Image 1 (cartoon, rainbow, N blue to C red):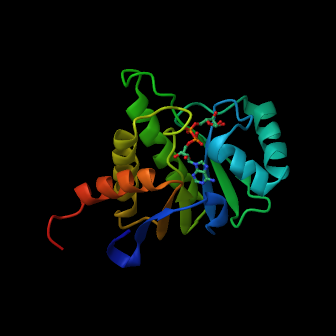
Image 2 (cartoon, rainbow, N blue to C red):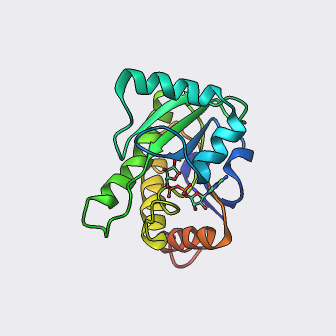
Length: 186
Ligand code: AR6
């Protein structure tokens, strides 16, 4: 599924493994400690190789971890990308702990990092909806809304955002969120 924006900009929803999809920056659903883990984080480190953790070690030495809702940048090793943006999503604790704003901030921070580097193509996984337990429908709405509001701006240099969703259920939730944003008749 896709949504087109003015100037040829486009948002894609695809099902698959984010480590296999070429992009300028691949976003990782990391943790605030930046120490790697399972899920998409594990897949990115396995496919990208040890250089990614070496760079995270340096970032940790310099600044500690990564505040929840923010992201840090490394190179991408063997991945089909120039950079990995490691975003620390919120752990879902019922919704009253600022989780929605923190999740939106992961997406907007990564898009800002892409703009700063003049990147054109950014891919995202479904941040926080695995181990971190964020309810899928709510997370999908936040992700799609935040990305659409960024990409529709005239001054953005990002041309293409790809949500790479690991399973059909996640893909379908993002498709519903995108449909809710679309005009009813097209
Ligand atoms: N490509 C795309 N999506 C994937 C892939 C992949 N290769 N593998 C899993 N997913 P999760 P979180 C999906 O748990 O909830 C880690 O241990 C997965 O099916 O990876 O933000 C980190 O180190 C789900 O839809 O991330 C943190 O400690 C989505 O990615 C913690 O988990 C996110 O699931 C972060 O938890």
